[in-house]
Amino acid sequence: MSGHSKWSTIKHKKGAADARRGKIFTKLIKEITIAARMGGGDPDSNSRLRRAIDLAKSNNMPNDNVNRAVKKGTGELEGVSYEELTYEGVGPGGSLVLIHVVTDNRNRTAAELRKLFDRHNGSLSSAGTAGWAFEEKGVITLAKEAATEELLFDVAVGAGAEDVEQSDEQWLITTAKADLDRVRDALRGAEIEVGSTELEMVAKNKKLVTGRDAEVMLNLIEALEDHDDVQKVFSDFELSDQDLKKLSQ
Image (cartoon, rainbow, N blue to C red; front, side):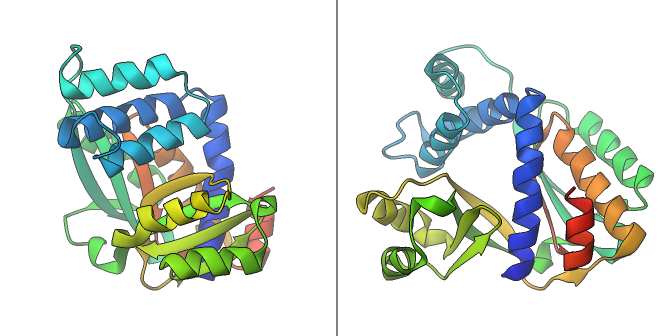
């Protein structure tokens, strides 16, 4: 999981940049709306909605924004009709990319994503190009000071987590998709403060991308994440420690 750890570190930093640009609230509102539309407005019986609301609260989204997004999803308030789509592409060095989007115009979104890939030595590809290289996992993050490694292993692994690792200033806990909520609840039951709880597409095998390709790849990921319709971006690329240090500065 070392490759996932490095990638998560960079995503975490770029996520903070998104928040400064004011984009994170838009993405969270879309996720809450979609989750409420698909599974109802009660977070106690809709685990996806509960995770989305938890993430919104961790990003200090006002409750009024959360409540309005839920009501738009359930139809109590008028809202835009969104659809969820997954696009697949190939980036520099042959790295594979999955892009999860929520859009009200799939033709516009596809055209704009294609341009981003073209500008960064990649290509937007057909379905099946990249999906086979990933598997869906639960990923929980928490601050390094939230718990000791021994306590995390006792609680998280005891509840079914697959892996616990340290990444930069945080812990990353990986679970099977079905075990995510149980592990999160176990952590909270042990009074361990959880940062985020999400389902992510984790690469089965990592592909080392170095030098100029690594720089262009990160620029592509940043451009994709900056797109208003893009919710999440996943890739199988791996960085060397040298490139990671250089490109994280």
